[in-house]
Structure formats: C-alpha cells, structure tokens
Length: 131
Image 1 (cartoon, rainbow, N blue to C red):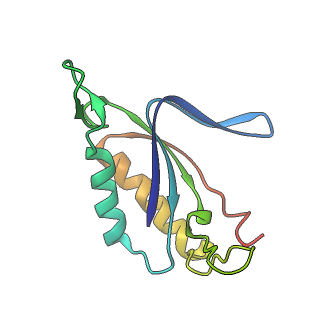
Image 2: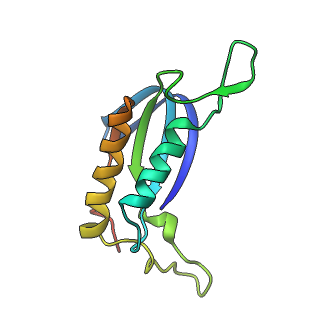
C-alpha cells in the first residue's frame, strides 16, 4: 500500500459539479493498493496515519496527531500510485491491485480509521482502472 498524505484545512471531491466528499481540518489521502497487500499492511498504515504527529500544539510544535485534533480524512483510491514508468512512455499498472482485490481492502482501511474515531469521507475510482 502507498499513501500520499496532504494536511488540509478543508478539502472536497467534485464529480460533474457535485460534491461527493468533503472534510475540514485533516488529511487528504490518496490510497494505492498493490496486488499483494493484505489487512496486515492496512492495519499498520491506519495506525501510522491516525497517529502521525504533524499538527501544531499550543507551542507551535508539530506534536499532535489527527486523533488529537479530532481531524477528518478524505480518502481517495488511486491505483495510479502503482504506475511504473520505467520503460516506454505508457505506464504499466501491473502491480496495482485489480478492483475485486482492492475494493474490499479499501473499504476495510476506511472502516479501521472509523473504528479509531476518525471521521472519514471517501471516493473510490474503480471505473477508471486500466483505461
């Protein structure tokens, strides 16, 4: 699994001018799932993500986690994180998990974040796989 994390004051996803996911203070997360990933990798990353201390405390030190600030997550599935551009001009996505493998793990990842007490908004992008 790969995560690209951006700390945000607010973020939203729009499709055809319709907001389908929106958060305030927290993380915008692009989540890539590899064909060999399991719930073990998801559990480890959920723990790291929700406990990553990159929010400022009262002394302006990055010392608070997403949980500490009651932050929110906007998680977007992004198989393109596993694009291999080493050969040629067209990326290969052979390492990216196919939707039938990735989708249940994506749902598991979100649910584990919710179990920790984090508000989760999400958007999955399975329909564009391989196109």
